[in-house]
Length: 61
Ligand SMILES: [Zn+2]
Ligand SMILES: [Zn+2]
Image (tube, rainbow, N blue to C red; front, side):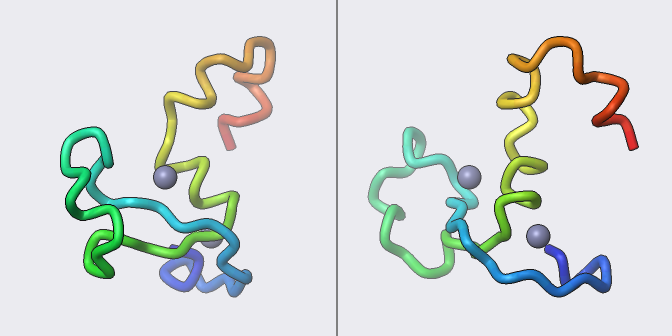
């Protein structure tokens, strides 16, 4: 994802494109895995941000 934005970061996180709860049989399938840096990984999990209260303005940019 960073490369699409012209940034280069080390990918530190593996994200499952399809949620394991929905398709547990794809847990170890390469086509269902994408490596992301932690920053991009948080972007694809917006639900994690909703728990942080008081930081909405900082995250808007
Ligand atoms: Zn990234
Ligand atoms: Zn993920």
